[in-house]
Image (cartoon, rainbow, N blue to C red; front, side, top):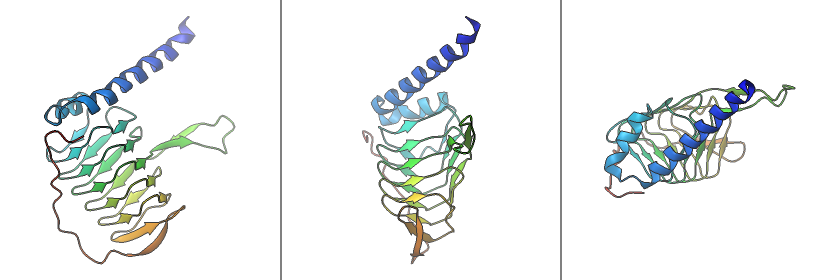
Length: 183
């Protein structure tokens, strides 16, 4: 019986996580900060996390001023995700911090935090893999699979992502997408 206790605890954790993800999509915009606080997320009050985002852990998530995270984004925050200010993450992007070691006979999990610096842009359907840092103002093109860190103001695209050039500006915009009923 005692050997099944950890499995029951794991199941209860994932049931709770499913409830958090469901609540996030149902709660009005104004009430979501209460959920973030209960989950120990550090989300700046001016950031917008639209409904339909999937979290994979409680805690280990920080989101900076003015950042916009769109519907359908998957945040695997088990090893930690830090997102700077004025970052734009388009729909259906996926940010992973954990995976499995395919060279380990036990298929052990391994992970590293992801850091996304100020003014970075992650376009729709992109995948950011464990341990990646997106430098300030960097751009990840749609569908790109980023397995290595991206320097500041560089643009990457493809699978695996390759450098495709320099961003031709130093961003100074302020994202303002805080709509009361945004989902």
